[in-house]
Length: 104
Image: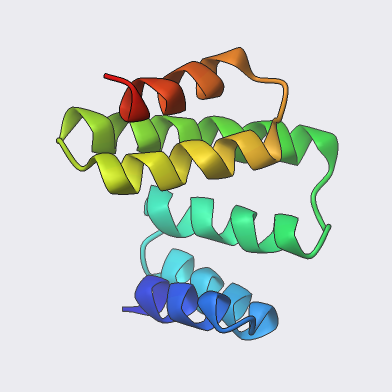
């Protein structure tokens, strides 16, 4: 619930509230990769990630994208790959994965 709330808040531009919701989601379930990726994406939107953190969150978004692609949820996979590219624009891996979704 907190992850979904955070996502909705982030869509409204309320990044501080979104970050707090993602952190609460991770307190409740520390293994929630989706909440962790969303937290990283929100922090990136605020310019608060080091280059190492950007690499970490790019990889996490990429893994979630691959999982959603494998499950047949291409729209969500595309969102994760796009976020991965925003975090790591020079990644050929994420570019290829995104391109495969749009040009199967």
